[in-house]
Length: 134
Image 1 (cartoon, rainbow, N blue to C red):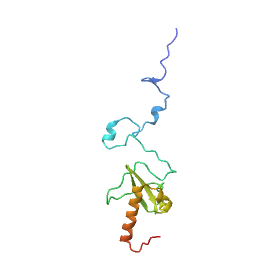
Image 2: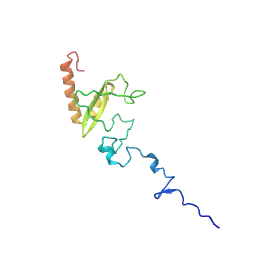
Image 3: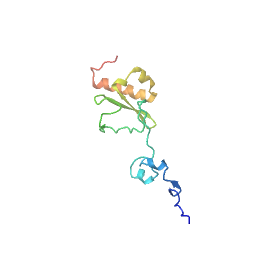
Image 4: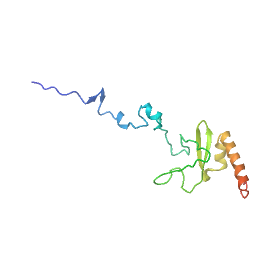
């Protein structure tokens, strides 16, 4: 009398040992209604700490207050740094601190962003006459 062993651990044709499903999160799930309700987007932007550019930044509305919350401080800047968000076009923005505002970095911006920075500098000089150009 041979006893028959139960089939190997499979569920709907997938092995239980498969690690493919162990990393499903709301961002990687295929539920469309999550996005429709304003939940996590289907694509989670990747963050490269070597590049001072965060994908997926939304440009704040005029007079909108922007807060940064982090348990150990922002990974992008010191809490005391002044941060300038410059739209690059195509839905992209770059966040610059006062330490990043150098002529070399300015020349690396696209023409639209350079124009916005020049416009901002004119406005700052008009609002703060004590600011002098270097």
